[in-house]
Amino acid sequence: MSKSLVSSPVIKRLPRYYRFLGDLESQGIVRISSRELSQRMGLTASQIRQDLNCFGGFGQQGYGYNVSELREAIRDILGVNAGNKAILIGAGNLGRAVTAHIDFPKRGFELIGIFDSDPDKIGKTMSGISISNVNTLEEFCSKNEPVCAIFCIPKDAAAKLAPKLIASGVKGFWNFSHYDFKPDDDVVVENVHLADSLMTLAYGLNNYSEDSAEKK
Amino acid sequence: MSKSLVSSPVIKRLPRYYRFLGDLESQGIVRISSRELSQRMGLTASQIRQDLNCFGGFGQQGYGYNVSELREAIRDILGVNAGNKAILIGAGNLGRAVTAHIDFPKRGFELIGIFDSDPDKIGKTMSGISISNVNTLEEFCSKNEPVCAIFCIPKDAAAKLAPKLIASGVKGFWNFSHYDFKPDDDVVVENVHLADSLMTLAYGLNNYSEDSAEKK
Image (cartoon, rainbow over the protein chains, first blue to last red):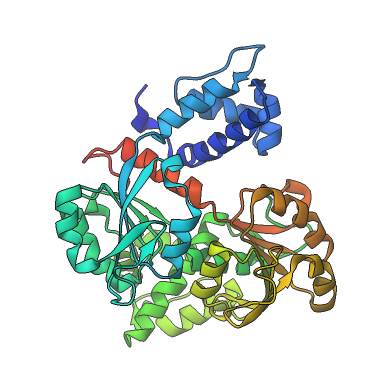
């Protein structure tokens, strides 16, 4: 079955399956029915069966899913073992939090460099990695070939760096900036727009009523 | 037109319209055609017209949109002027970044309290707000009536606090934890699952080819 046929909403749910199965595994649970998994995850059982069928299907009638096997399969589909080389740009509060908060190897990445333009930050370390001058970015990329860049910088700085990084061979961006990548950039992008998320919450509160609270 | 009929994807796009219109406004642009707006935003013109029609429609045939008027209208729809009282729980790296990085009043919120359980953090200040003991949370809520809580804490801590906060009258959660709210919680939730986002990017890189790069 071709991977490229899998729809984006299914892909977006895979990390959640992966987390849930990890929780079950750490609780010593060996197998689970799609019904039980659905109750825990707040999805319908048929949704879960459909999702997992996109990848060839797992589980057996009357048995359910083997937790470890399913988790391993999803891990391989996600490429969580890939160790994609990543660099982070912007060693401010946000960059610091991302570096400290995220367990990169567990999510499929290896953080190999951090860059900033602020002379006060350059040379200091963050989570054990020395902060380099952003001027050395292209040289670093041609030598170390990172495939992923994490943008913890303002929009304008991102707009300047994105084409250079793409030219250097960066294929994926974890984008916390408000910079919008162009359709013909031919890169994979995961946007994390915190301010947008908070404004969406403002809308929800503005339109809140006991009956219409958004179900999650 | 009833607001509750507006679909979630439209609502999710509103903050982006709001940001773009703000950029245009700061560039001194007074009016814009839906075609030009669509080119800048990477949406189709008909998509934009459809989206804005959900709120009664703006813009005039042959004129386009008045940038300031449209921005103000979206601001009011989002409730960005509401000043929703919010508290943040978890003064670690992530909480610190959120506090430092987000301009709360600009997004419809007023941050009125920060809480943690770590004695080393309690009493210190973060962005000018003194960090309180999480034990005093319920007392604080009954006195100050925040409507929003920001979870920068692990899943287990979130699971313990969520019911208490809901009972205290909190209606909205900005949830950076992996805690999953229950459908009958009757609250509005915006989840920011950073690890899931990064794993989705891992999947994208794992399945990357020049032809199939996810368009953003």
